[in-house]
Length: 519
Image (cartoon, rainbow, N blue to C red; front, side, top):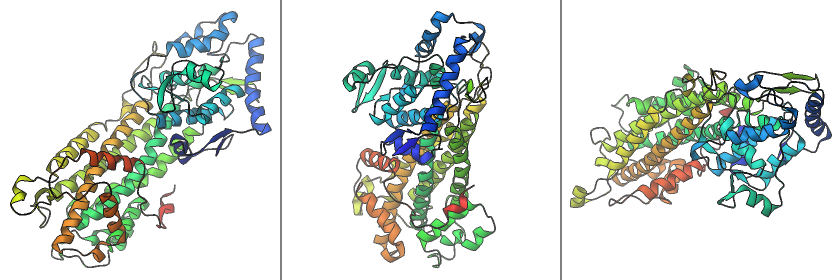
């Protein structure tokens, strides 16, 4: 159970909600409920006193100088989500929709948005009943909030548009009627409070962070396996060596590699002093991501646990504070940086994979790691096409690393003249993660095949392989058999990608040094 109150929640909490692993509840604590009610009562009092409140008694954005007639104020929030119903592109999958709703709910529980308890209850009800807004990906510039995608959350609260429900895409009104849920009639500030925030980019950033953290560990395990396949030198990961360049994440990666490779043992080929960079410098590549993860966590969780709409309602001080907390600059910067670190992992694994295919560099293994024997070797091509595919996925990942945050566009009659592009950055990051996970799946097939070929040739023993790497090969073989004769590998790859994204394998569970990477 995750309780929504004034307490901060974590990236892990959002992802547990996103995967449907936990129930959620809105706090019944009297002080929490009173703070929420105080904000909405303050706004009602201002309305009775005929005060001018942005987005409540005025139009939105550049239309803030347009005063709304009193008899139309109640209609204004519904107009807001209606005219923003222009999202395009693919729709967010249910997991991402849950993350978005959780992020928006948590921000509104800070008590500075002027919403009613009823709105918070309705958001909680969506998560508890797994009624999830269908949200198009495209249409947010990441300042003035994720207006267009969050309009789909607002509309669903009011019984409109579409939802995911029981594995289907359904009309919201029909689902509400079946579940006995009463559509909301939004209070004057509530449409703005839902839509004028960073929940889409922040929810997606939580998903991206967790996938990147797992990918860092998986890339380390693949590197250990590739080191043995390529007859590499584990002394490149020596503890004393890494003590003189004390980036803690980089040191953690080297320690994981030492553990996997029994690094105290002499190399099989002592005459080759140095491996190529994709092996020797792997901790320096993966370590950048590992060292950056705590920093990204700080950015994401600060945003997650903030009031990020406009205006901010300070009921205790009796102020309506106009500002720009909807601006997604921190998430944009974190996602632009994270996607670059992740794309470098794709490039690293792709280079390792290329070495394993090539008889000029793989130190005695068959071309393309083919398992075919005798004259049948002539018609079998092993992982040749898989390596081509991995190169294509890597190229696409690298192409997407151009920072979205520098492409600000002036919008909305130049009112929104500097915008964050945070949601685009988060979407780019998720796409790069997908591509890199595809490269990782290809690499898992190759290193498992390569280790089995080394064992068959007598170059290594099962004891030399070690328990962790033996278990990893066995786990891969549960999904993808050894490639003796060529076969189409799309199904194997898709199954492995699914396992990666669901963190199917427990990697480095007994390590004692992750706290060194904490900020």
